[in-house]
Length: 275
Length: 312
Image (cartoon, rainbow over all chains, first blue to last red; front, top):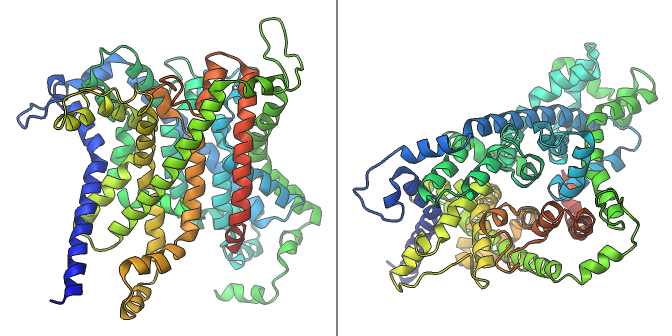
């Protein structure tokens, strides 16, 4: 074995060791939370290999706060937002991709503005608007600012633009109107992009916190993130086992979906990101 | 594709495409009708509030029966004299300039490490990417536990070397650093996948050619891989910048801006002023600063990325 080969062999081993060390450090906080959640609280900071497993922390957390409501609210919220986004963004993207109407370019730039100036920072004025509309403390109020998504419009426009015009023409020759063409030609061809956008949207709104915190103040409207925060900051006697159990419980659906469909998730995030 | 071929020969110019059925007017009407639902919501919840924020910053906060009064630049003068505003701005700059390079460097390192045929690749990828799926609120709670004095894992590990306990989040010198670590932990895996995607586009023949020429791996990375990844780096950079001004969930959970405002970021301060002190006019004034910051960044992005966007 030559000297350079030895060096490269050595650096390769170092690289593998580094990668594993980094991965272990990365998983450590989560592994620690899982440990605390599935063991009795006396073991939450005491790592004994013979510590008994228990579901008690999850049961306690579930009974201590109306998590069933919170799950339902989050479910309604993400479904409502996604449904509205799919319809609104599809129509707008179709207009931008295939209709050269007056003012299109200016309108498009105005849409793209939302990529930088997001509803997340306009909380003060949007709260005022919701008050004027009488929508404070309702689930639609949480979703409304996000329903016309510039990101969704942009993503779908790019996709629609790649659809060959011949397909469009062929459908037209058969007598289909613009909306029928959209539904029969464009939407089916964009299916992977819809899946990608759907995953990104659902995980974004499942995780969103600040705006829902501001706009909701009752059990029947609060999403999981806000419910979890209220549960964790209320005096639980700092029982970390129960708090970590609640934390894992609220992230569980997304986490499970991710573990089951890892490849699709990663690919979707990539597809939605490369633009 | 037989049936379509004749059409390809007589293809009309794109502009005229939807005009054939009716008048040219129909194109404009159809276009605007399709856009209308999205446009109404966009104007109502993005453009209108952005403009209204600016207007409100010149008025006083309505209190009780007394309505808002035009006060000119008073709110801005208050802001310039407000030490907490300066503190929040400074914190935000420190936070952004730490989180962004750290996240990008780690994301790139992770992508390079698992791009090859490394042992345990699925586990490594899972470990790096999982924090991305968790809500920031959950992440913050997990790290709150991790940092808890004496009891948390961090103190337990350090306790092997010295037995004193640290109040990581209660100490002015460490609190912001703790939050930076949380943000890096959450986002590095997310940006990693964009680098991974880009690395897979790079032809392996380049590496072979470089190896034949005797180029070292570091040299190859510096002169070939990194320049080829530049568009990805720009994309990731823009997103990282936005996140560092947009996301303050972890501050609400972990420190509430304390101790002594050392962890107050701009958006968190806006939230505090607007929804705890209910001083909406001052909150609007602070929002103007944030909007101007974001607009400058948007302009920068537009000028730099312009070519790339039109490329597609």
